[in-house]
Image (cartoon, rainbow, N blue to C red; front, top):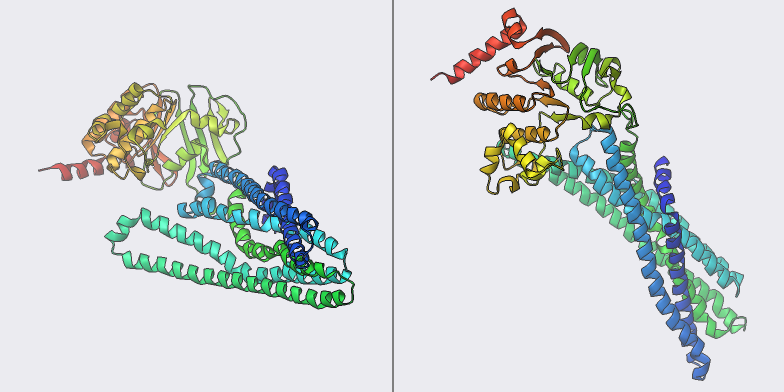
Length: 581
């Protein structure tokens, strides 16, 4: 039950609010019992036709307790929900902050739909935990103690009877509900997560689903999940109906038992007849405090499952140490890699083996080789997305681990293979690289990336909406926007991972030339499969199975007649075959 302890610790942040909520809940129940008791006494006494003066206190009491119950109920709901929303806000922020710290290494095994389910659905489920699981038991205990003390002033028989039935309703029934609902409640959370993950994946891949004729298969998968959800929800509703019936039965049995005890006492003169209704109906009203306890237990299974799913993220280990203060990262700096080796967790074969390179300020280096030989991995290690063990990465001669990862990323600009564009305007997406940039700087960066002309061709130019993940523009246009965004950051080092992959050869050559010219004083590490533009870099490193097998300038490697020359020849032949008339 560690997860329960973790969830309860969040309440400590707002313990004063939580305590106030419990006290208001107790005041609500007390007002309700007092209202029913006073009303019962008023009706019973009025039947004897006394003077109105003798009923004034009871009349005022009914009005007071009627109003106070409404006020206390409103304040209790306001305070309890406010407290819960404060807790959930803290939890959501902490969850996202945790994602930031462990990404991308720590979330590589999670689907985007599953992460969305955790931060939305699972945290929403915990709303029921904080409102219906934590507060009601405390309110029930306080209320029951007050009720038993009150009725004990008349007879211990009343106290014993009420205690016995409230113990059945507040302890036995909740334990039965917990036993019955624990499994379906947890399965319901898992089903919701699977349903959201499947739905998100289906929406994002709807074009492929249609193209390959898998609509019926995908619909069946959703139907199966939906039917399973209906079955689980039906079980939970049956449990809810069952516990409501049991509570109602025990409440009525308590009333009958009290009547069997109180009526003889009235006949024998041990109890004033005017108080008979007070005892019976007051006890009936006191069950309001324990009626929510079975509901609390019904929510524990789903709350524990939701809490465990959130805890899985919080317990993911840090692949990179936290952003503690380290050496200041200067505006211009050199990078040196020495005998670097790296193996991904749960993999046997190393991705990088003995890799070395030098990237002083202003130098441009190309990384080439077939897919999967470690080029992108090297960029991720420089960005401190993964931690390395063997070899060294030096910034200005000092170990990169002595710098804050956050400070390093501020000085490095990146263009990933897959450009992510947000569902906003062109201008908003570009300003992600530098929110303080003015309009002239944005246009200048777009021109350097070869994006300005196509942006102006859009319906509203830089204010055009480009859709989620750039749905309204082509892959090549998206890459140019990603490149412009990276240029706008005005970093010291640029890590470009296949930034021209979706461009035609002519456009690629032109944009590559303009980009390199604009970034002529910057350091560039370019990952590419196209060799034709590498004449503009200072050094080329050819990777094979995680090792650098050839290095030198483009011209040197072509004239060497090795593996690079063979790749160059193949590319030229392919280009010739596809461009001849």
